[in-house]
Length: 433
Image 1 (cartoon, rainbow, N blue to C red):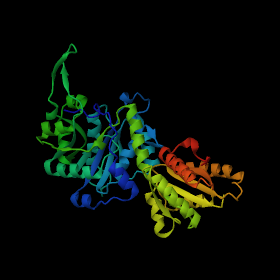
Image 2: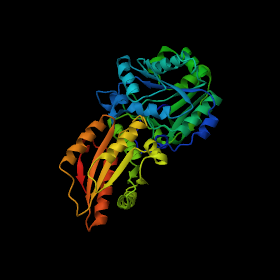
Image 3: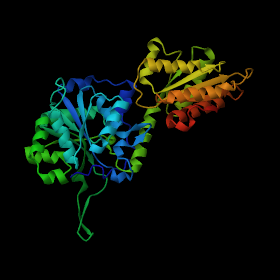
Image 4: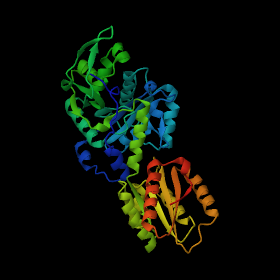
């Protein structure tokens, strides 16, 4: 039975491990690379209209944090080194929109094909495209993974399990325990009977097949299957006699189905991006002391800080693994240190798939003049330019006082909130702690 999507009421889903590890540069691919030593490709059917979200835009193209949902899903697969190609099947009227997404977010492994009028027709078009691969070096895959474009939190370890089982059995699919009891109703709308929940599972994505099995299944299936069917595993069983291996998947497999699910997905990504930051001190003792105090303050907010004097040499690794930077400036109201961070990010030629946050914390002693009148305008101008590169700049002014601990705690709270929310409205603002 296929209940994918309809039972989707995410109860604070677990954080997507692939998103966190791959973006932070901390993943160890070796175990997956050892087990997946055969070509694997992905088909993402993305031709739906998203009627259940109640939005004008199809849900796969709905944007949060400056990026459409389908781009997050593609990124999850592109981050897996043993996946060779991704075919996205979209409605003909959205082909140009999909191509724009690929170009803007520098997706490398993606090919776009026209979708069909139904889910099975879209998947079939994607599978056929893999059999007619335009790049000879890629070739036909051994295993095809089919996944929903609106399930962005897929994990590499689970993909490995699906790919391996599909190669060995011919087909494999993700399942999850049923959340609700399933009942059958009469034509008059009364209870007919209920199913014993323990005997049934919800069919989820991803699903994997050897190329031969899934291509033959679509060649043999009926027009009725194309028009009304949704379950690929059933086609493999009915037309190829291939009984799929079912593997219980993690809670992260949930599907964006309703408008509220978009908010849940955005919340998860925001929280994932906000777990850590790099603090640059310039090597000054006062800045280092402030950074240490900030680290203690944000630790209570479930956030970790790396403290470095600069972003040169070995410290440059932070430019690739971090999405948040805090520049601590002491006795200097100019923004040259923030500009140096922007130059360093540009030098790395990093594709900024998510908004990067840069916070300038200016610490002024009691015997110093406040920041110049020009400073708020300067930070606003700098932030306006950086925003076009998906970099969000904020400022925090901290004055030395006898209530030192309270002031630093306030800076920690403001910085954590700015990193977590990534608010466009506060970009370029100089906030007072």
